[in-house]
Image (cartoon, rainbow, N blue to C red; front, side):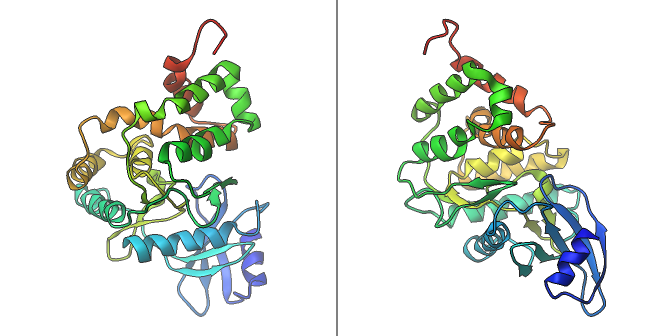
Length: 292
């Protein structure tokens, strides 16, 4: 009833019912049946974090499609209260689909090089604002706007404690020694496996972006650490070949994925093991003397 009321308030009076769907973590979502058109996907927040949430998401979908050639749902309506999109299909459980996705993601990352890191506006990761202030240094951008920004969030403070928070700061200071220097490119920004679907004709399609110009491995790390299905192993081999990734890329994944784990801890009571993964990654950066 909540989504139906919002759709009617937005002028979509031909919607007759909304069937809830699961899978997302931050918003309420459903498939709306209409009298005078095809069904549409709709999502909203019970309490909208800010006026620009869905406008920024719609813009991100357009950027991925028009700048990077990614398939995305069509935007039917985006306003302060809700986002309405064309309906996508579930992704098929085949290696061929994941190989096609490897080609699509490699094309996005290799065709959208940028001289700076960031985006022309802030956008949203779940219920939290993602700060995208333009920065010339990728290490500084990742440290300030993707890792340290989560310190001060009440759930993060409770989960980590002072010693782990100091360890995160040490890790950030050492990023240039821990990660190779990489150029900026357009990234999806929230590419866990639930955000990968398919178009009606079977092409890989993505939803729920938090776009910015950042390291390509931010997207790769997200797929890598969110339990992709067995058939996805072909994706990693093909993507690495297409983008000429070095053999050590897997070793970097825990550090790069800290950003998403911190975001999960900050926003949800059940962190699905994210807190433990953060603490394990930060363990080498802790000191036992109590001093930095």
